[in-house]
Length: 320
Image 1 (tube, rainbow, N blue to C red):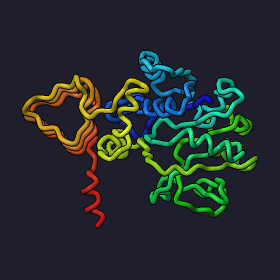
Image 2 (cartoon, rainbow, N blue to C red; image 1 turned 120 degrees about the horizontal axis):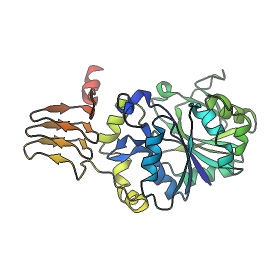
Image 3 (cartoon, helix red, strand yellow; image 1 turned 90 degrees about the vertical axis):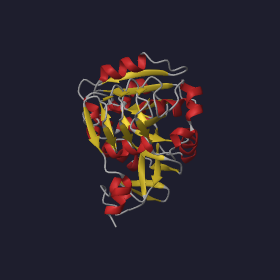
Image 4 (spheres, helix red, strand yellow; image 1 turned 180 degrees about the vertical axis):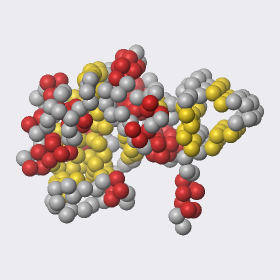
């Protein structure tokens, strides 16, 4: 089975970071976010990957082609004009062929068992299966309407009045039948492909009960890096064995002055932290220089900008 990774987006919610770094290469614990998906795919025995690219396409292609990914073959579908999730998938119809395939968004961190998802799909006999995740934030993120074991609606767009605490994880197993309903032009996969499958054979779902994080917003990106209970650190050794990369908080080639204080933070490759600096609850992307005596608290910093985040404890107090 092949995998298709959606990686062409602009990463608008992560600006200004994505003005200079492609969203799929934005690091989580000093590993490009896209590589967590590569790791899960390899664990599941899926070695042929098709990745659509548009924003910073050349940077993504060069980075991946220059990285040793043993056992994985990555093919790129470059979109000179961005095609959206539906059009981007349609463009790859010939590359994906006539077999079922796995679809994954590039901006998620999860421990979804792809093998179990595939088994569930095959047992369902349906042309598509979505991986869903239960969360109290479903109404805000976008709830999925389900009924009798099938997906029937997305945010009540089909006027079914079905409401649930499930959200779509950005992961699915799909039959090539979906291409009958996709458009060659800019379009979304929900309004075209998923809706087409709902009305023509049905769309089943697999309930993921592990961890799932959307890192598409600045707040969620910051939290994913600093969450000490995250699944990321627990799969560190397996990642290292599979793709030769290990998540880590402090890059070994970062310079940190002996008089600087760094706590609960992620420091990227090539960072330089001067004397008497204080870095707390922050994420410093590669190449950041912090001048002596500077304090950085609750922030995401790249070499061109600093975005200060509202600390979650402060946010909680304000809501009381």
